[in-house]
Image (cartoon, rainbow, N blue to C red):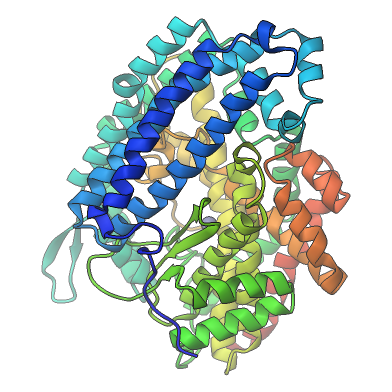
Length: 602
Ligand SMILES: [Zn+2]
């Protein structure tokens, strides 16, 4: 069997970014959105309460629009990713984003009407089909609606958000584009690099001394513009705090937790359990330092590759990767294997290594075709195979939810990576198992452990920093010097003082602090990683009988709180340490194996 390296987009809409089929679709969408707007405006819950037929029509239309928009967006964004110079695709993507935002005004009107219904009538409504199936997202929408200000006030805030909030996020990107990092070449000549180029060079530098020198220059580059970055960060946080206050809360964690459908207790116990287990991770970091011939790791060494000898890393052809993934999926779930087979055979994947593609990988849903599309660049490394498995995990998540209402498919960031991380764990374990030499095995285990260290230490430092920063920001502007101080304090605490050098201006160099979409763009990573690891541990325990339970869990990821999800499908209480510990034990097992295998090389 030989699989196609390019995806099939023509079966979605023919004609690429000039597609007349897509043009027709967009025109229909515009009419439907207008119709949606009117249907929402005309809806009078008092009059409709006999059978709620009018509301059924509203939700039907919203379902249709939601599916069509995703279908069109996956197509146009896909064309743009596969060819960044496709200007038509860029225009289409932009046009579709505008349609998304015009939809949100009508959604606010609808939400306000939900709030206006009294509790008893609302409870009755949720008993009726099809609303009963979406009781959770509908309740959630109504509860959040209670905090909304008047329709006009919300419209004013929305209008001001573009320049007053999102504009600072755009400014960040413009500032990053001006950052120049000066690295010295081997021959002593100094070259100037963009931030992206410099990050790549630093990540691929072979020896610790070179990396350390690069880190110093990197730090200097960000520090030279720190007051501009500090202004940007302060205004972003200031806008958020003021917006929260207008909506009745001074608690800056309320929104991020609500967004992730998570209790504060759960988040606290997760970090507490991680912190109790950090000495083992520090042991790993110290061993890694010994293998590199240095006393302590520096900030840049944590994720740098380590090797104990010469080995030829295994190279996979695309077909070999496909077979490897399908074979290993099948030992966990036949349905996962079948879905992967469909994805390879029906050309859902764009994997070709060529110029003009955007970097990175993702998976996007085609709800009308009941398919997905996966974007990545495959060059044959074990890491590529893991990425491919990761994206297929996302496709599997969409697949098992394909028949649910749109509302019940909107899972939050903390559980969004459940299926993908699970699939990746299956594959990265298999690559370690099949390593052809001890040196290769150590290398693969090291990258697994480095990832865990990033989740436990690096992401923790971001969470600690943001918590401290938002607290101080309540009382006014926080200066650049103070930001760096808070950052280093957070890093030392998170890494338990195990590094030789830290990264004080990390608050400027890390894009995630400037994300205007989701606040506290950090803890959901660690949460998702451990949540998947816990599920993976459970699947190893229960064997093939776990498949049905796993699918049932995935189907419910947008239909209840995270705690309820874990209680219902795993029978665990996330506010207690046990589940977290069982997940962390999996990491400990990898670290123990690493310590044992590397003992003779120090
Ligand atoms: Zn992912």
